[in-house]
Length: 396
Image 1 (spheres, rainbow, N blue to C red):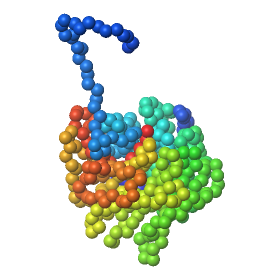
Image 2 (image 1 turned 90 degrees about the vertical axis):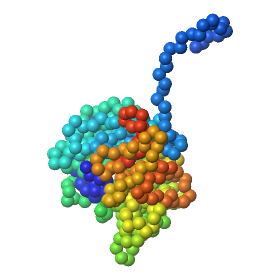
Image 3 (image 1 turned 60 degrees about the horizontal axis):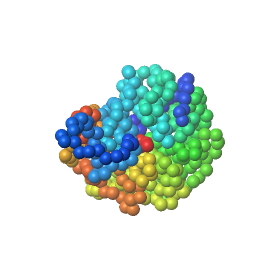
Image 4 (image 1 turned 30 degrees about the vertical axis):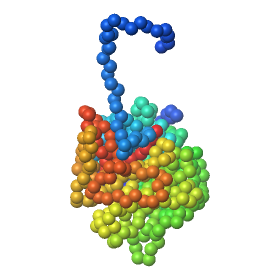
């Protein structure tokens, strides 16, 4: 199992000689009865499955696509009811990776089969999980980078390199043929270890180059500067400066705001934090903070994703390198953590309001029950706190 901190730096994604045909889908009555002389027999009624409070004492909208909560299989977690659903896995894959298109109607699954020469890929409806096309085979070496479908399913976007030695570049593929439509961006000289690109609802896309937000489209050869964000320098070298390619980016459902990660220096290392801003660069706010400024651990708040109503931002606190086990709080329904492979229980999924005026200080190894997510167990009546070795995506 590759932890996110590792596979973000395994900058390999080869998509060549591919063929994918993506089919987008896109009592009446009245009167008064006399009182019976003997009580009527009431047929037994099966009580409906009760929802649980998935977030504090309340629930949240939509579903969370959680990659590798147990090290292998992805799941959809309904944040309104707490029920979770396993996603169909590849028959012979070492690990499946999933993504959703920008409006959450389609799911894409690709299999990471270490050492294989081909990798199966399939598209499913996000509601009924019905296959939309027959699985295609991806030739070459497929790394861990995200494959992101446009809202209409016409285009596929990824940070792509021809092989392990070739630098990843922002690439747009025609989703019906997987032929390269466009390759290159202002990130070409950067070592990309994050996912600094995201689709806009209108079919264009934005990407972060250091502290600059740029916009382009699959059919345009140019990019335009949208905003220059007033962020602190994030270079690890003496003299300061900005580093591009280390951020992960998400766009709100209405396209007016972004959530992204940024590295901030603390003591002798850099933590990764989640920020939000308007698409024009105004309203910049930091959402996360480290509770213990003297902690020797490196905190990585990453994989930001917006709720369907645009009111919340979910993210993962990746603490794979911590030597201390997390302390999960007890809950009346059980509170067992979502865990399978060693290390997956170390990374809680948190949710914060996008409108928060100040950063929320988050400690380790204790888990903050007020902002952590919990769902029902896959079987039985117990519950689970949500954690993952990989990324998350919030869909309707």
